[in-house]
Image (cartoon, rainbow, N blue to C red; front, side, top):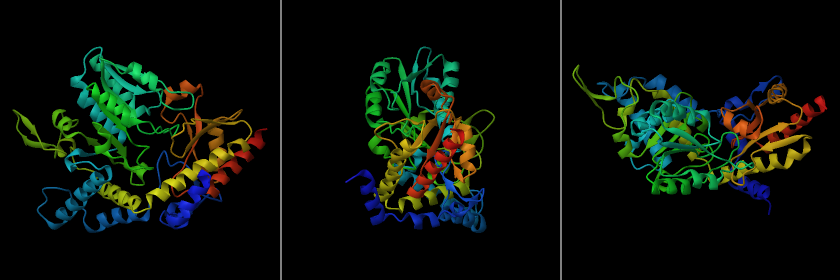
Length: 417
């Protein structure tokens, strides 16, 4: 039986995409007179009614600042806020909510970790990243390296988009202090074998930082199984609101590294002579947090966890299979990133067409994709392209929408032939 047949059977058994789509009101609209086909999920996923309702209910019924409020609204808000933290802990299978830090997103989380680890770095130390990293997992380390004299060293990738493990093994050495690696590439869709990479790094005493922004929409990572030091993701890619994300950290390291920002909430006692820090996780959460957004993220996780995950993953695999099967129907089209293990992301180019033109012309047909360098310029340099067009799929997309994408690409190709 083909992968597509298996996926279709699984979908029929436990995954009703039509019912799921009704949970996402934005998907029912028209764009440029055409039904919206939203294929930009890797940049930001859409939000189910459950998330919209949870945030609306928070503002209508319980809005107050959290912690220390001596009134009922404050208690309700705090219960909802900390309940969302527990939801994240459960989703990640972390040992304690003390390990779950609210941030504005993956970018802030990596900046927090990079700055927190800076005092440990010395001249000549090495920070290992990969050629497929998002800028958010490159630039913060470069900034810290400039201050400390450390070096950012990239692990190579193979032309098919898989990590070059020989390159990794040769670069992981005595000077390596940090391994900062993406779980899933936002451009290629490649799922990296991070478990053995973490194991090898830990054997050398290297601190491990995993960018999970593109992983969590597609599968559930297990912190106790991975045993990494830090793991981070953004809410808005996991069908939750913008403006909030999560940093998971090993508790001992979180205790040791200094706060990233100062202000209210993150303190224990303040005097002009000395300030002491609050306990975890609040030590890293200066100021009034994004309360409604935390509630929304908790609702998003509950929603996704309420789906048949095996059927959902099979349905997503079917989308990618269909897309790959149709690539040959567009003359001059080639895919960037053909790793064996990947999530449903299709980065591509069409000979003679600029990616931005492809995106604009697809938009006229109601089809939303992403074009450009995708915040991964070193990877674009590796492939020798200024950018790509990228269709990134979610569980609410349909096989018919994949067909519409390729019908649209065929029209564009004929227009310029």
